[in-house]
Each structure stands twice: as structure tokens, then as C-alpha cells.
Length: 409
Image (cartoon, rainbow, N blue to C red; front, side, top):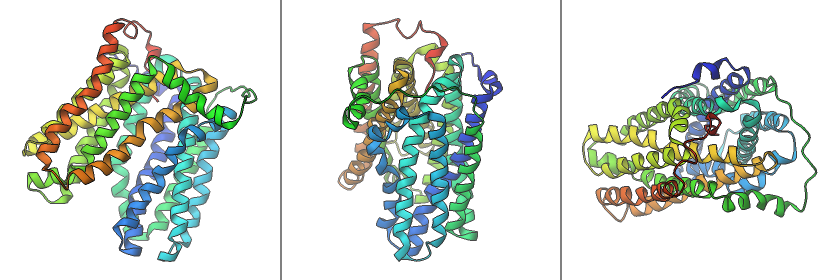
């Protein structure tokens, strides 16, 4: 498979985007880990520590509404604002030094998550105009690689800063990365026309993104497959410590498995642009789902080499359907709808992950992990069937498209 990675790195706007993703991704990944540890140290409560992730994820449920902002204003200024707002709010965390001030931490995390939803919607829409079409697939593959790479590097770095200087110092580090990313976004050379005045009420405008996804024959199956995949991924993630017990290791072994899984995602990020050009979105998504599903089922085998191979395979398979779905959204959605549609797609795809985590946490208390893994694999595999079946009905639609097909968000 050929790649255009060198051309991506030579493109000025693409290089600025990727650098901003690396910088801000480092700070975000560090804070996500440290916020829970911070709350745990102040209160001793596992439940309150878990609420940090809930505060960050909850705004995603309002994705269709928040995404309308990306269609009502120019995307570049909105992207800059979505970085400056959390940067300013993070500085208030220097006042969090006791349990009775934790409300401020949770409030900042909630706004942080909401700004992230707006940021993602604006970025997805702006990429379509800032990055040349033939480079989008490889660009977004590199962006995924950067994001996953920061998830491997930033948490231990954030933990070290927290241990030495406390949680407020990590918040300051994250604020600095947001400011640095803002400078990079400000350097983008994009020309945006003023959006047309909105038609209808906010409910109608919000629903237009969901209506576009549901009525589009190529977008709907990909988004549904993405949601089903993330539901199964949540179930699979909830089984991780039971899998480790089955292997006979201490809970800290989860770090090894997650590290290998992250490495698999990094590799597929480098290859996704070329794979999309060769396979098209549906086959790329279906093959990734199949790979992750088989690996999840094989986790029933109590073997370290098998467990490590399965983690790498899940890391490589999971991003495929996400990349493919958002690729299609960028290509098949009119610019005036792109912010709302991308945000709605993100909500439909990622919200089931939280449901899967909750369901898996309950099921693992009732059933043996080997049985759950053996059942989960075939169930997960069913998510790939509609994609392959739809391709059989229109065999050459995506395979004959130009390289501009490969533009995952």
C-alpha cells in the first residue's frame, strides 16, 4: 500500500494541525489520569474519583446541540476559543486544596469536556477545507497516531509531575499546552466565508445533523457499526481485570496490556490512509471490526502471548470503523451541516462505550470471564455483517473513488 505521509508533513496547514494535536493531546492525557488520582487523594473515595471521567464524558451527550456552534460561526476562531476557554479555567484549579473545593474541579472538567466536543466538531469541519483532499486520509491517520502516542507518554509524565508538585501543576501544564495549540491554530491559512443566517429554531437546526446521518445510505450503516463496536469495546474493557486474574497477574499488568493496545492503534494510524484508498470505508471498517472481535473472543485463552497479541489486534481493529465512519461523514456532508453532523456522529459512536462499560461491570460479577469473552467475540463480529452485505449490493462504489475518499476525522 502506497502512502503520502511525506507530502502530509510538507503541507504547512497539515503540519500545524498535527503539531497542535500532539501538544494539546499531551496535556489532555496527563490531566485525565491525574484528575482521578487528585480526587482520590483528597477524599479517599473511588466513586468520586470515577466522577472525573463522567464529568469529562457527559457533555458528549449534548454533541448534536454543541455541534451547531461549528455551523453558526467561522470554524477557525471557534477552534481558537475552544482552546483558550479551558486554558483559562484550568488556572482556577490552584484553589483546589481540600475536599470542599472539589466542586470547582468537577465544574472545570465538565466545561473542559464541552469545549472538547465543540473543538472536535470545528476541527472536523475545518480539516475538510484546510487540508488538501488527497492528503486527508494520511493526515488523519497521523493525527490518530499522535493522539494514541500521547496516551502512552503523557499519563506517566503527568503522574510524575503530580507526585512532585501536585495536581495544580498538572493543570498548569495542560493550560500551557492549550495556549501553545492556540498559537498553532492561529497560523492556519484558511479562508472561511461567513455562515448563512440560521433557518428555523435551535431544535430544527440540531436535528438536521441527525436527519442527514439517518437518511444517508452510506453514513447510517457506518455510524451504527461504529456505535455497536464501541458498545462491545466497553464490554471488553470492563473485563480487563478479570482477564488479568485469569492470567495470574497483578492488576498492574493492565498497564502492559493497554500499552500494547495503544501501540496497535499507533500502527493502524500510520496505515489507515493507504488502507482506505485500497479498501474503501466499508471494507476497512468491516475488517477492523472482525479483527477486534476475534481478538476479544480469544481473550478467553489463559495465555500471556495470546493476551498480548489480542491487545495489539484490538488496538489495531478498533480505530478502523471510527476512521471509516468519520471519513464518510466529512466527504458526504455539505459544509453548512458538517459541524452538527460530525458532533452527532461522535455522540452516536462514543456514547455506547459508556453503556458497555457499565453493563460489562455488572456481567463480570455474574459470569466467568472466559464465557463472557467467548460470547462477546461472535456477538461483536455481527457488527461487520451489514457493512459487507451492503458492499455486496454495490460492489465498486468506494473502491473506484479517488484518494479524497480517505479523509477520516
